[in-house]
Length: 375
Image 1 (cartoon, helix red, strand yellow):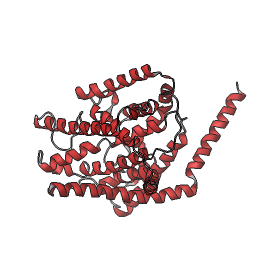
Image 2 (cartoon, rainbow, N blue to C red):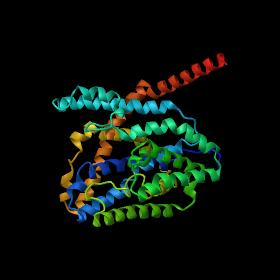
Image 3 (tube, helix red, strand yellow):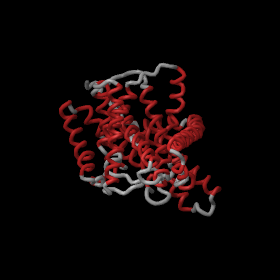
Image 4 (tube, rainbow, N blue to C red):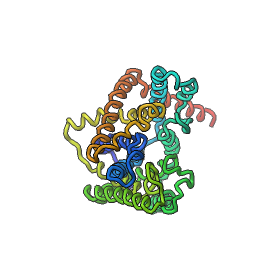
């Protein structure tokens, strides 16, 4: 089906957006928080921590797939991007000012001016927002991707999809060349464009209807278990180091995480949510998801409050460790959501989104008038 469909809001997709953002702080507790590196390699705690990581690392892929799905068939509106950028600037500046009061000797002048343009400083201890940097590049390229999605037929789409899958996912994983084409393990623009295109294909061809929900769930589970098992084998054979080491088989562009992300997306796409209380919760958390990322993954903030701060969980029994990791991740998610709810109210009061939308419309109008007057 190549036509653009109109339908009611997909609350299942919104729920996936929320679940994916909940997965992110859990992944960070396991990784940056020091749980995996503090556990004894091949111990029950170590393997359990990696099992959690394997199932939750798919979150970023899902987030970008959602963007491609949602924006399929729509005109690119750049005010959406600048609204997100306003949020980035808001938290970058607020956080560095707050940390200056808390740690005056460790926050210098350079952190202030770096906070003004955070996406251009992605290296070093106080690096910021690699996800948003990649997202910006993807968004700027999205009109070209949308053009292809609009005009390609099924055969062309299949050819493009198989080509990018083989070149940018399968071969780099098999040959452990995840830096080829500047893929950077999936932490970059190119991989986000692949995911965006894939999300558009899911929408265009109703891929989620190809299997029943339980089969999509099974595909996701199998892919994640295979990722965990392959990592275990590679570590056992000393082909990769133990600890929190991302290999070609457990990074974002791995075919297992690519396919697993698609499967998990299709699971939630097929979820039909009608209960009013559930819809109310989804409506509350959906607009504040991005703020959860901006607050807790700010590298300055993470340096003081996340890095190696949860290593103690690795010394607990496995069940307590799992509960602790999930509860801390949930606590980060809820607390950051409440903070961003206040920011959301402020932005609504200031009419940030509508002002940026009007600004974009005025710029387009003046530009078109200029072109028409000179044609």
